[in-house]
Amino acid sequence: MVWKPGHYLLLALALYSLVVTLGFSLRGRQLASLRQEVGILSQKAALAPQGYLLPLPGACLPTRPENLPGAPRPYRKGVSAGFVFIQGDACVPVVRGMGVVAAFGGEVVKVEGDYKEPSPEEYQRLLEAVRNGASPEQMDFLRGLEVWIRHPDGRTSVYAHLEGPYPGLKVGQRVYRGDPIGYVGNTGLMGGAPRLLFEIWEGEPDRGRFLFQSLSREELFKEAKAFFRLE
Image (cartoon, rainbow, N blue to C red):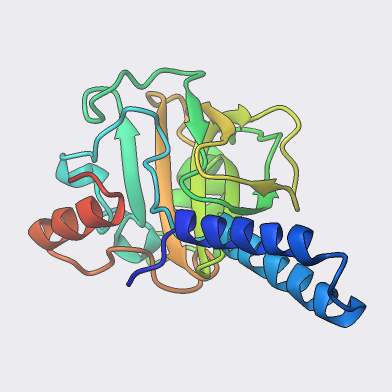
């Protein structure tokens, strides 16, 4: 039997009822043990996998090759690391100020509230500097305003080119699947169209593998649809 969040919750409630019923007859050590077990099961219910969401409500996976993980780029060692949601390739309008939500629950590990766009000359020098690969610091700059979330499964999701983070969002905060975390923008693009760059990394961004890396287009769609439960 595969345990789902509801199973953990029901078992936790059952144990809690037992604690209440037998509370007056059990010794302190037994009662404390049952309370501890209830707490553990409640935590498991809160963290049990529910699947990842796409970060734009109502969106579908992009279909244009240039908007998929692994798409060629003149930097990042030649490929993009995530999905690009842009007007005309997301099944929903993608406009400045559109809300972005957490794809999965976890801890906020980066929130950027300020970003100064480079001059055209500075931007061109940066693109030249990263032609054969960008450092994590250079990638931070190229992605504009960002929010990062570290998830219980060890992955980290990145939401980039934001207009800004959700008010009050801060590093160390616990967020849940579907919580608002920011707004679509075009920072880091030198005036390009509003879009959301959405990356999921195995571990820390820019230092390991990104999700769906090295897959063919057909394999990517198959695995992504299953991962985001779109079928």
